[in-house]
Amino acid sequence: MRMLLGVVLVALSAVLVHASNVLDLTKTEVYDATVGKSAGVLVEYFAPWCGHCKRLAPEYEKLADAFEKKQDRVRIAKVDADANKELGRRAGIRGFPTIKWYAPNSDEPVDYTGARTAEALAQFVTEQSGVRSRMPAPEPPAVVELTTANFDAVVMDPKKDVLVEFYAPWCGHCKNLAPIYEKVAKVFRRDTNCVVAKLNADDAQNADVKRRFQINSYPTLLFFPQGSNDKWPRPYLKERTEEDFISFLNEKCFTFRKADGSLTAYAGRMPSLDGLAARFYTAADNVRKSVVEEARKFADELRTKERSPAKDSAAAYYLRVMEKSLRDGTQYVQKEAERIGQLLERHAKGTGKFTEDKIDQLQRRYNVLTAFMNERIASVANKAASDLADKTAAASADASLSPQEAQQVAQQQMHREAEQFREVQHKLQEAGDASTHDEL
Image: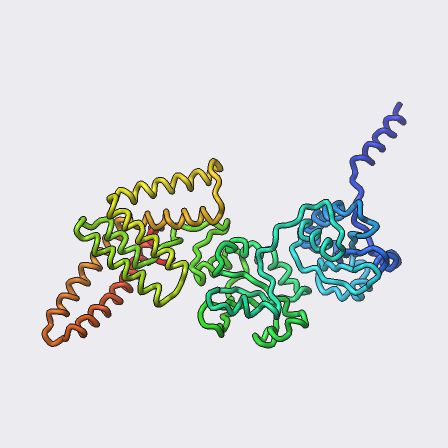
């Protein structure tokens, strides 16, 4: 009876223990009998003490399982390059893990530089071999892959802010950065003016770009700000963390994204229009039309000077709210804010479904509506407007000034007041009032 029980337990354990589909090629004779033969082989060169290798191991097992029924055409394999250093030298291994694809009947590898996930690896193997796995296709990468062919079209576009990582496939720091960089790219994927990109500067085909920007180490991160056609880059000097990248791009691109890709309470707003909106909301009925004219003039000047579609769209929404309020009363602002707030709340709870772009639009509009009703902004803006009116009147009354000179004085004063208004907003923000941010 005991013997029978022992046999049953052994059989049961054999069923429960999952045999690995990863082929071990650490022995040179096994390696030579596999690589360069009739089947394509993906090889992970690893070291048992390597932390990154340990984290990759379960993903690599999933990958091998996904190609289990295609082993006559694709093998998923590994080499302990710490135990067999000669094989590591033959393959030119400089760090762990290094993953290479060997096509059938070839010992010339293709380096894998993508994400270390089973899905991304499976996609790579399928691209190289034409053999499909049981693994679902991964989401397309958010990082824009650059080459000499598309570099200028993407990076030198005067309407785009572009952060570029110049990397080398063998660079350990580049491999560590890759998943962080991809997360950052996903945060900004809906901001077409804010591009997160990379270029393999070790590829001979990209040598011209490498020389052009004097890339001597990896990774090198350069930021190309929007502006003229011959944009010259600024080095990225902050820490290579997700938080620092997001903070940097929010500052440079004026995007106001959180780590989950959603917008902060500052998105969609502009400093001068915040002040005009708050003044409009608190003004007497006979004054509101003049405030709308000020806002319309500001929007026209903005359209001429900056030519920013995002800022033009924001300014248009401020004006639309003012015009509807003239027609329906300022209660429109509060009712519309409540309506949009309810839509955002439904989306957050999962009871309402909207596209990501629609949620961004709603959040920006909600932010603008709250600026109309912000009492602190109204107080600062009304005082600035009152002081400006007094000084303009004094300048116009001065007999020594021509009408043109008086107008010039008034314009200069307006610029000074705008700067003072921004300073006050900044102080309010530092004091913890999140609703007084001053940019789009």
